[in-house]
Structure formats: C-alpha cells, structure tokens
Amino acid sequence: MIPSHVDDVLPELAPFVHAVQARRPDDGTWCEAWTVRDILAHQAGTAEEMARVLQAFLDGAPVETRGFGREAPYRRMPDSELWTAFLARCEQLTEVAAAAARDLSPDTEVRWTGRSVKAPFFAEHMREELILHRWDLTGDDRTAVQALNEPWMTEHSVVSVGLPLLARGRAGLDLGPEGRVEGRLRTPGMDDVVVVAEADGNSGMYLAAPEGPATIESDAAVRVLLLWGRRPADPSRWHSAVGPQALRRVRTLLSGY
Image: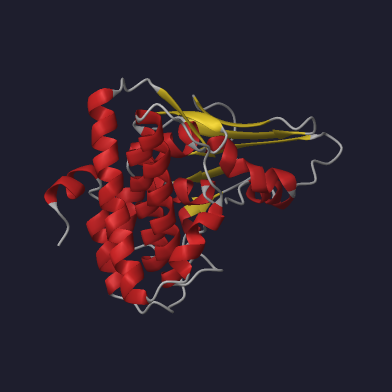
C-alpha cells in the first residue's frame, strides 16, 4: 500500500505500480530496448538521483547530476529487492520534495543535468516519468491517455525538458541545404509546440500561438508521446499534409532520449 503522503505528491505512482504488478519482469514494453524490469530500475535510479540532488541543494552543498550509470546497482538487484528499493526511493523523493516546498521559493533554481530548473520540477518530473513509462507498459489504455492529455504534461515536456529531448535527434539529423528544420505540432484549442534545429548547433522547443500550417496535428496525448520519441498504437490519431520529406525530418528530430 502506498502511504498517503507519497500518494499526495505522486498520484501517478499507484497506476504505475498496478501496471508493473500486472506484468512479468521480463515482459517487453513499448520502450523497445527495455523490459518491465529495466523500466523499474530506471525509475528507481531517477527517483534516487532527484532526491540526492535536491537534498544536497537544501543542505547548501549542491552536487552535479550523475549519468544513467546510477541505475547499475538496481539492475543487479533481485526482482523483490528492486521492487522494495523503487518504492523506497519514491518515498524518499516525496519527503525531500515536501521539504523543498516548505523551505524554498517555487522560483528557486536548482542545477539538474547541466541546466537550471525550478524547485517544483523534481516532483513534477517524477510524475511525468511515471505517466510516460506507464504508457510504455500499457500502451494507449484509458488511464494513459487521460494522464497524457493533461495540459501540464505538455508544458512540462516543452518548458522543463525541451532541449534535452531534442539533443539525440539533432545529433543524427541531416539539416540539408537550408541548414534548418522547423516543425509545428498542433493540438486544437492549445498553443502549438514549435521545434527547431539549426546548422549552427542551436535548437529549441517552445509554445506559440497557432500560425500557418501544422507539421503534425493530433490530440494532446499523442503530441506528448511524439515529443518523447514515442508512437501511438493507432497512427490515425495524428495527421500531416507537409509531405514525407518534411515529416521525416521533424520525426527524426523528435527521437526522444
């Protein structure tokens, strides 16, 4: 059972836990290189690192973010030990996030993965991780679609994670003679998400009022999946009229982590 103080900070933890428990650790997932067990190790490592970085900031001794090698100890654990560790790391993160909410202004900037984020980022990002990786387990079920449709999911992906989300795709993209790729992802009734990569190394992702033709139009849930390099099970949920070359370049840019 998830303690109430953890559920208050991470309401998406319970649906994620139920999805994991309904599967075998060696089951495949929509994240093609990972099994269920791999996702659980990743989540445990992420929760631990966010708690470590935020706690160090609260203690007045900031530390740099470690890379994904932090997951190695969890990958070596037996399944039962990994499960216990994952839940413990999530609880630890909620306690540190609660202390940060009490002691820091919401505008306080903390270093995370080489950039500055606001203090509430840490709990919110764990919530996004739980939603996104639950989708990796379940695909497009009702719970996943409802969570991905939440406006804060789009805002967090764009504002808080936008540049890192473009790094992999930018590195493998042929920018062609124009030296630039730009795409607009549109969801009716919402701001467009604009993604840009340029030959001089600049890239960006931002929200903007709808203008001109969209590269891809979809519901909000599909748009979040596309930003993270995922694909909905039903491709008819997104639409495009820009042609295969332009579409392929934008989809390449949106390769995710």
